[in-house]
Image (cartoon, rainbow, N blue to C red):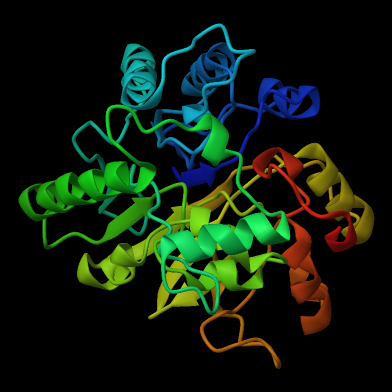
Length: 336
């Protein structure tokens, strides 16, 4: 049987229904790899459990952190913060044989390969500014005024860096150094990151001010510069496929139960959990651009039936992130 490069993100196993998805996930075929684009959970013990369970089901698991893994909540028995918490997660992964952003980049040698899989931990620097904002300060002020503030502001600590953007910039510098030194220029790249490398996928958010916590403009050309054939991400809880400069971007979130249950009711789909296939590339990626959908934003959704939806229905999905309340400190009642 052909081995595959598969992907999932935003498992959020603190939710019993999502934990059940992971518990019931079948083993992959021999040779299958699983890429995990972050937000496995919030509590340290839950994250370790899920990574351990998945590492037994796939030949290789590659993980990058999301913002939720880096939260330090009072309810969590593990109170490590910032860089110390991240390093502890890396240590757990290494004990399980799970590849992290701190390890050598593995090469996928299956069908449509070889390709270098590059797990990234970059964070964000507030550069996805709301329209009309000229600085982080103005962007955050607008978020406060409108009641849309990411919980990271209270739960994700940048220690030992002075700010989350300083941590992001340090990660960018170190990652660019490694990419220059370690990539084989003859091999294409599959990027794995919690956030999209370009801003365009955030344009459909119901509350665009949330984009400030969704990446950095400094990676806008990486998919071209480093010869990417696919870019896998999560965070937005809007699973879909888009193309940017001819490169396939795949948002592979499971999301919160109320999100996937709503999709199941609207589109008659099953409980999510089957990983998305990245390589070999699925044949359905040849679908044409739909009328009314901006150039470069071809929407294909093998999981939730958006291939049957008209453009208006597609863009109704801009409510997905804002309704995922655990990422938001507050949303004004009139905006719900």
